Length: 204
Image 1: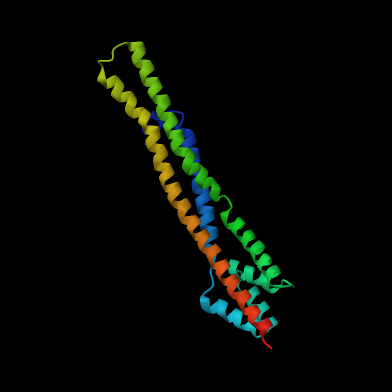
Image 2: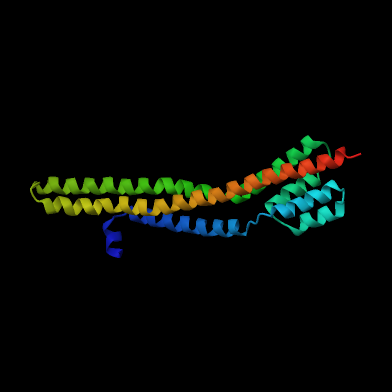
């Protein structure tokens, strides 16, 4: 493996560095997202019922006891004074903060997933230039081993780039899917809580 790495040329080093950076980001983001819990429908419904009944202390206690993104959005709605528009705006701001935290550094995976194959392609192009320069110096194009040996070495960087980029992009889209789910749950339960408060306000 080390021999193949060395034959790939200097471009193999930025590909290796990119894979290390991507791995660090993946591990860190996976820890964050796997720790990000989503409350059950029953838990959210219980908060909505207490809010509808005007049980302020119980609602506050449940919000503090469940530090999830959904609880943060519900807490922002609950603590906002004003009309429904003001509560929706507070929910949007709280949701944006949560999504900013969850999406932190994910863009690096998208960048590296797109950049690493280009690094590999660049390495292959540089390798092909070396091969044909060598052939031109020798002046004997009939020697197939000279061409074949140089070409397969040049293609190593493309293979390395794709081998690194494919898992990076797969994990990136998987992590992005988890963030999208949190965003959906925040919007859904935020609207549910606002509706519960609307019912309380309209009650005689």
